[in-house]
Image (cartoon, rainbow, N blue to C red; front, side, top):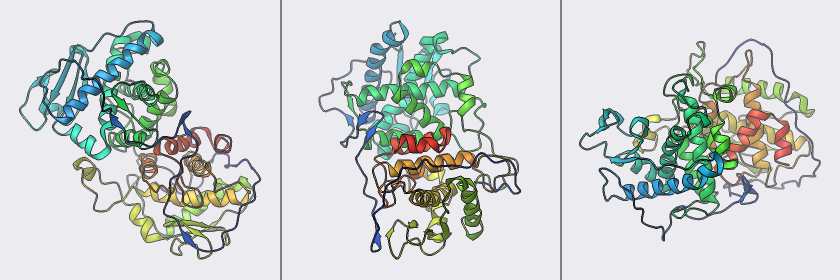
Amino acid sequence: MTRSGGHGARRTVLTIAVTVVTLAATACSTEIDGEVRSEGDIAGLPVTHFESGLKNNAPTPKLTVDNLSDSDDDRLAVAAIADVSAYWTQQFPRHFDQNFEPVEKLLSYDSTGEEIEVCGATTAAAAMNAFYCPPEDLVAWDRGQLLPLLRQRFGPMAVVTVLGHEFGHAVQYRLGDKAGIDEQTSTIVKEQQADCFTGSYFRWIAEGRSQHFTVSTSEGLNQVMASLFFIRDEPGQSHAAQGAHGTAFDRTYAFQLGFESDAATCAAIDQADVDSRITERPFDPNDAGMGDISIDDRTMGLLQQSLDESFAGAGVPGPKIVNEGGSCPGGVSTPPASYCQDTNTVTIDMAALAELGQPIDREAEFSGQESAAGGLGDFAAFAEVVSRYVQGIQAGLDVPVDNANAGLRTACLVGAWTAAIDVDGAVLRPSPGDLDEAIAELLQPRSLISADINGHPAPNGFARIEALRHGYFDGSSVCSSDYP
């Protein structure tokens, strides 16, 4: 986040539609471990819990792949290629009134081994990568570093995600004008379409129509969301730059659009659509911290001011943020931040939040090692406090804060607040990469941003990110209508 300084025009203050429900009082202090609920649905599909990946009875693909090894990662990759090919063979006639022509060439390579020529370059230039080469109509993947890292860190469906994305580019190549793709089309439009196509493919898997893979709508889709977070662009890049792929927020948006709609919707993504909603942008020249500020008494005071101003229209007094250890003596505690109903305060553990607010260690991400600092970024820490503040606003309005929708409504309100303060003159303003830090927190097993007052998170990462997105794009009113 950044501190803007001064005062300028602000958006209309946030309001919350009121649903009158009497809340049960909590008699004693209890710390909650963060049990995950399983109510509701994921984009119209039931919440399911099972191991996702290659089916035991999956057919053996009959594909010609250059430089193929007998490794588990190559077997997984070939199954993914066969599966996504079957998907597009079915869907192309339905959505685009033409048959799908198979990709001409497939290549597996080892970026740690001997160099080979591909798409006018060596695999050393491609390095840890997966890509589509239009001149050769070729999909290639690195079995040496990329696929093992994805599989080990995020599970097998992460590999399917990346290869499904590359096949999305092959789809664009075949559609041409039908997808609005030509030599002038920006990279970001192509990438958003490919992520969206991947989402439509995963919907097909989730509906049980794949011969090769099965994916649960809870842990399985979490693997997908985590892999999209991993392959995000660095904060501060411009979406207009050549090679821009988008932030994690942008990439998950496109994937979820495809999952919730269809391939034809994905093909309709164009520059105007991307320009209207993309969050990837350069750092402000006055942002001395390049998106990071400290978590301390001063910045918590600014956060208090920002929240009080943003939610002034709610008509109830907002809770006070107090540095008193993060636990409620007379109620349920969800450290490092807890909403205490009896005192209408948000008590925080400043030291724990400061640790959480350390920048994400990108080098540790790529090496597959745990970060020494263990941080998720300053915005993740601020957003956890915001989530408890909006619990207080809702409780003051007799809106239920302990039911199945409460966690999603809370994540939605965090998103609405984030958009509302993204204006010149706001005392705190989100920086490039902040929404990605929120996603990093939302993908944690014990996400507080998406938790109800008792610390129970919403069902899965897909639903949590979707709720944040709804609030960010559509404002606070949808938080009550979408999550009543």
